[in-house]
Image (tube, rainbow, N blue to C red; front, side, top):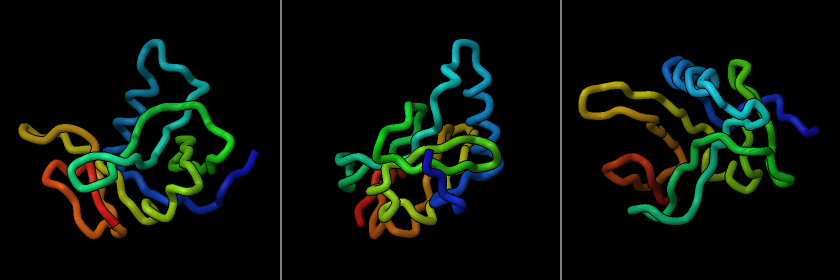
Length: 114
């Protein structure tokens, strides 16, 4: 099993708390890790992926505050230095992404271009 010492992305305290809440839910598959990644699509060209998944062969693994995370090695160039936060406001509830590599982002904050 290959692991990295540094974390390519960070989670704020609020995001860590929300991820832990999801992992503590009844029926959560404890064999899954938190996947951080990107896929084509969205208003600005690429959309963020954040969810639970099995580790794949081309993934790197890292930990953030004890949470095992996986990311496709090819996605690191788009996501290195990104911060994931959790917003729990009246008008905005969900995970948000602050990506220093994005040249443009959309209004909804879930897609970007490089």
